[in-house]
Amino acid sequence: MHIAVIGAGYVGLVTGACLAHIGHRVICVDNNQTKIKRLQRGQMPFYEPGLKDLLKRHCKLKQLSFTTSIVQATKESTAIFIAVGTPSKKDGEADLTYVEGVAREIAQAMDSYKLIIEKSTVPADTGQRIRRTIQMNLPLRFRKGGVATLEFDVASNPEFLKEGSAIQDFMHPDRVVVGVESVKAQRLLRAIYAPLKATMVVTDIRSAELIKHASNSFLAMKISFINAIAQICTLVGADVVKVAEGMGLDSRIGRPFLDAGIGYGGSCFPKDVDAFIRLSEKSGYHFNLLKEVRQVNDEQKAAFVRLIEDKLWIVKGKTVGVLGLAFKPNTDDMRNAPAIDIIELLQHEGAKIKAYDPQAMANAQKILKDVHFAKDPYALAKGCDCLLLLTDWQEFKKINFQRLKKLMKHAILFDGRNLYHDENLPALGFEYYGIGRRVGITKKE
Ligand code: NAD
Ligand code: UGA
Image (tube, rainbow, N blue to C red):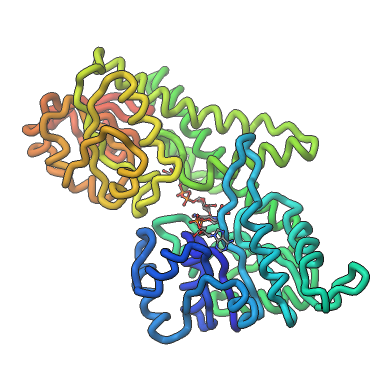
């Protein structure tokens, strides 16, 4: 099928590359000219494992191309995915300016049947608003007395990929959710996704939109739940890693998303939890449970900083080394990374910050001020009063702690992700603090 994907960001590019990979002819659109020029030259706007190769391969095969023109992409395609950003407004509501703008541009370029699919995360009811926007903006020749004479469909197809494993998630989804209001739209979406052989949930548009917000909010709730348990573990002297293991083996609960830490970050959970709270409020339901999820998440970062302040006693003038900056491993994405708040809180207390991240330093440099960026974990450790592990990159598991210890002023490690729950760092001479863990407790003991 000829498909357009509008918005060449994390979701749009992965969607475009993967749809090309399963046999469709895809044209990716972005209004950022520099980004499109760079993509046409084979340069990536961000780091996502495997994506560069996939893009390169399908551009070469002419299955995939890039443009800044929504007009061209609309004319060439039957199905059009909208994958632009839906950031938060000041009050937390989703800002749908980009979605509306794109819907208008598509409408103005339409000259035959199109299926317009929302892939961006949007509040329930957006599908209806897109439909109305398209009706109102079709070329005059396709509008008779306010009624559209050109056939089109709107559908919702929320995306559930995770950054860092986006291609795997897209190609092997737990489910594909489609919200449709016509048999034709359903048939086209089934044809698009048929090669994936995935379980498909077909529903109305509002329910599909709600599935996305409810899923992200539920996952955020699971993380906040285990973070709250971690606080209790600290107070009663239990080990949250063991508690998560014990809980997670219950198939009704499940182990994923029970890793306690410094809270969830990224471009989606914080924004989508806010947007869902606002949507519920506007609809007449006060989602206090979700407000508490957000509160626990904020508190997690503050509690981590309080722990560091308590153990260092005086933070002013101390050199703090930060291992990991990205909001999660295998990405260079710094959007809402917990590292930003933690570093700024410590800087406010007078700490000198050094930092290292395998991929995110270029993005971090645009956000963080007065940070010395090191070339590797050992250069980072040199002269540090303590280290903070803020992103659970697997390569940090391979660090030689004997070597690290010799370089540090004081061998103190605050593990914000419980990455070293298996290693006996106290036995190597480290003062070690995890999240919700008894100091020095390891599997070996
Ligand atoms: P992004 O910011 O990385 O990409 C959005 C792109 O849209 C940008 O390149 C921007 O230039 C482009 N754009 C904006 N207005 C445009 C216009 N008028 N015409 C053409 N292009 C335009 O955002 P993202 O992370 O890919 O997220 C996109 C949506 O998908 C959001 O709603 C997000 O919540 C959702 N989502 C994101 C993820 C994720 O992992 N990042 C996963 C699932 C869903
Ligand atoms: C999340 C969802 O997992 C995706 O399904 C969804 O499509 C996406 O949001 C979206 O809508 O954008 P993503 O934000 O890429 O994906 O990454 P996650 O792996 O979910 O991690 C989010 C944050 O939670 C990270 O900061 C991570 O460190 C943290 N996290 C995750 C924990 O603190 N504990 C956990 O157990 C899991």
